[in-house]
Image (cartoon, rainbow, N blue to C red; front, side, top):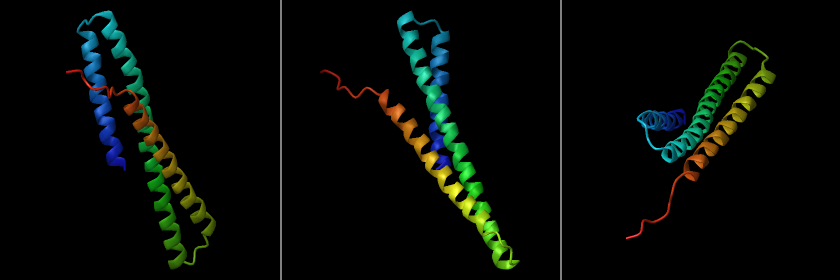
Length: 120
């Protein structure tokens, strides 16, 4: 999941750089305004992708902590059942939030597409 979101983030950054360079090259005002609007959408998409990556990383840490606590519980008679429950549920919550961020990012990306057929 992190790889998929990171790939989308890389494409967002590439497109933003292209738009910024195009704006600096001195386009007419109407085209610049369109590009500035798209840059706003790209900024929102980038923030959502970054949030998704952060939440996925927290998910991995939480699940890893769960595994460590369960392992210690079996090998050292460590009573960490509450810790493992909380860390596992936190990991699942982080994963679900990351999926929601990913869904929002893809929704914004498809909203700005023009699916109109060209006239022949």
